[in-house]
Length: 625
Figure: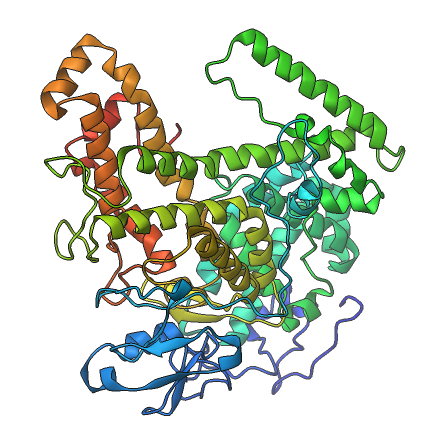
């Protein structure tokens, strides 16, 4: 028996019908999808021409330049990689869609180089240059400066209204029960192992069968564990459409929990997203009779649904959602702030509740969710601010003041693993720009995550399984995430007044295959910076011990000299273009900066000052702090 809306297909040869009933039956091994050829390698045709308007090399990114000699269109990254040396280095290129591009000039290797803010920036040969694409006119750019968080006692204006559009609602106690069930089911699932593979010599038809069976097994297990009656009905009729809302809600819980807690579901979130991504394909949706995807529940959506958006404009909301940090304050001051916050929460929840549809407890939940966002920013974004403060405190933007060059940030390609060559002033600007960009990305991380899921779960943007050099990955364009990243980069460039290095943002290529990889990459920034900030903050306490003071003075000269050695090494070699798999991927692109930082982390135990990290309680970049 098939559910309503499922179409019966004609069998191939004498085989059984390709229907949901037969897929879940005992004779599923003989099924063949009528629209799919039984080939072993079924991912992409090597002889297929690139789609019109796309790069002929990667076939994933829109074409941005045309090589007049090759008569082919490339994206900026592929053109620079294909025209680095030999006779191709002399090829001349012209930009496509000149009306939407910034003025550009051909470089020595033919790559299109943008000159930000009228400054001619000289680059090393090892750096693949480019500039951030201007934001298309169709993309609305808010005039609200979201990074300027309202202070206590001031009018919040529209800051919370815009921010709340991407803040997920905190999970309730009942929802956490289903979250644990979902996480347990995903832990034992081998979904990606069976789907994202070329093995077994299996045809695409059989892989589709296995995909549906895996999806149905997970859905059936969730229903049976949550409600036996529902599970019994599911197994009897095999009609998933009647339980569509339940499945959508359970999967939405996992997505919402992950956004608010990036350090959770580290091994299961990828399975969940890829499962939902496959469920959006027409074949799967037709056989299931429903979609597994539903929009994330946000604070803005909840309040807008009940017509109480004015809560986000109320002057009390700043006090009701503030994060109370002890610091060096007295216990009396902390208790005073806690009581003030509780009074603000009670006042707002009583004023804007609309029982019975919007009870007071739900309004409190919305306020707590905004507070959770502030905690996220403190943990993830604030370490960038602290590192910028250390950079400004211990290093001069243009001068080397120490006689022994201890405060020099200059690096040279080939020395100490560096792949770039910068003098002190250039490296100072490069580090400052990288930290400022990371800060802006983390400030808008919830917004980026929302757009990334929209790209991943899009019905119109398919993915391809390709070998990217690090195994098989799902390569998929991410237009919405890419546009947002270019907006953030443009904002950072304007705020800094210039740009050192490349502005290329990898998205949907072998470096960053899809939006999930992008989000995973940048959600790890705090894992790099937070342990360093904690270690540096512990140094004065360590120096207060007579024995450790003697050790630090004998080994490093003084406490300031120790600060200078740790920070100088980090600012030099965590931003030196190293860490890539090959020479062509190394350099100063937007993603390469983070790759270099991770490469520095992997070599920390070989540093002379590693013992100081251990004395401060450091136990790794992936531990608890």
